[in-house]
Amino acid sequence: GGSSAAPAGGPAQDGPPWEDRERLGFGAAFVDTTKGVLAEPADFFRRMRPSGGLGAPLFYGVLTGYLGFVVTSLYQLVWHLASGGPAVPAGDSPAERLAAAFQGGTTPLQFAINVVIGPIGLAALLFLGAGICHLMLLVLGGARRDFEATFRVVCYASATALFQIVPGCGSLVSGIWNLVAMVVGLSEVHGISRGKAAAAVLLPLVLFCCCLAGLLALLGFSVASLAGMAR
Image (cartoon, rainbow, N blue to C red; front, side, top):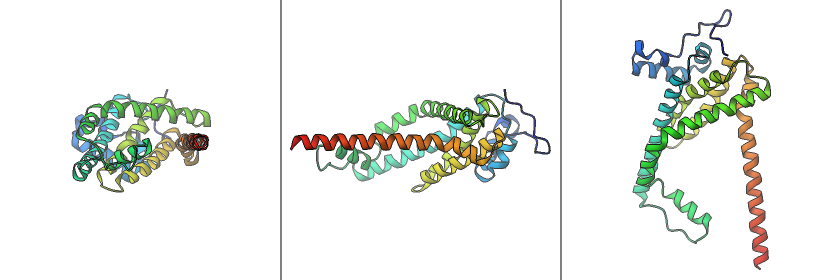
């Protein structure tokens, strides 16, 4: 289990503000927590209690993720309405139809579905992401605390999802800053080097990209073989 005692000579682990909502107020606790994660992640996670339950961090992670998700979906809905829907594909191949669908943005029905199922999907992703990160920490010998500590880092690092509110580059900034917050958070909470924390965060992404590249190469080889047989 994770101890909440502060390291010798370090700051007291009295945070995050989100878990003191009754005293601070919902709005102030949300703003202070978000500001801490985005502006001073090292200090925020150094002060964060590594234990104290999953409910509060899960609520925060779903809330911030949902806000970013809904705004992004709204932008896509506006694009769909402004562009008049998906472009007519030049051909009937699956690739051309998929490209046309992406060009058309999000339909009103898709937007409604996103709004309804968003919280459930985000909660599942938080647990999945934390599970993968903690597994990587165990493999790398960096899990100095239990799963709860890792889960709390993943949930509070979701503050970066609010960058998605910025049109255009917001999603890219959100993704990059989330990786930074995760690395800093895991390093501070588990008491490991930034390098080991970065390996725990990035290794699953590298493995996923390698698997995806392999699948695409296999698909391309299969398509080329079929095309050769059709001649």
